[in-house]
Length: 274
Image (cartoon, rainbow, N blue to C red; front, top):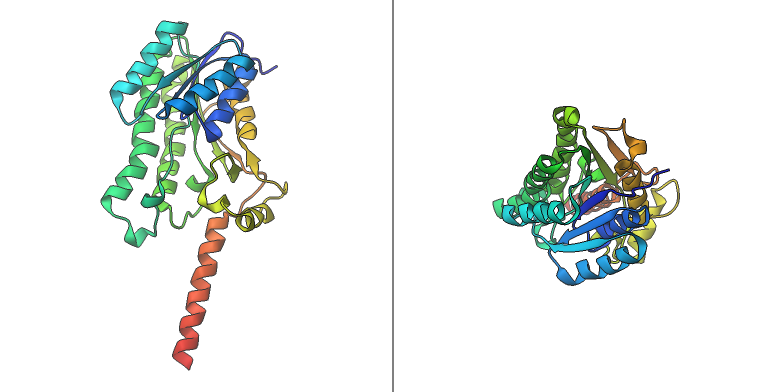
């Protein structure tokens, strides 16, 4: 079960972090993998490992904010391997300089985050769907931030909420073409490049305290779910947003933000009463 032999899978942002874990999981399941991303060195490293695990792997340097790059990625995959069976939209992030409270966000910060995580993810998906003449599976990597309050990265959460909605609409519009569309929404996942919420042992402990399974997620955990969604065993699964959070329902970012608010409010009250 869950074998991906003879399937061709493209993973954007596949060179590192969660994308790397997804790529290697797909390769181990038998898929031919095409790894796209902006950093050539990380792509080549991932491809080397994927080739040891699977039948074939190819690195295609790609910036998904450049339509010509995306079309070249699609064309290269089809020319080299004969088609696309699965497309994983993993490219997306928020740079440190684009993070901040909603009252302070400027237009450039908003456009940078929403553009990468929503606008360009959509157009990459559109290009992939147009090439899926034999049907296939599209997997959008969303985030639990799309369904929960997301202090300090509200624009990122808004973009992921948009991805969740687009996932359902794509599934409806493209179902008759044999294209399934689902989203995977990870919680706290520890990779070789941890985000700010996981950059210190104390922060990681606070995250774990909110997770019933008592551990952080891994890129391999997300990869295993993507293997299922890419496989024929998921043939009747479409339009779903699947949370993969270890059972957590409490975002630590929200708790941390409220902690600071409560502290500041308390200090202000003490000052006014003295």
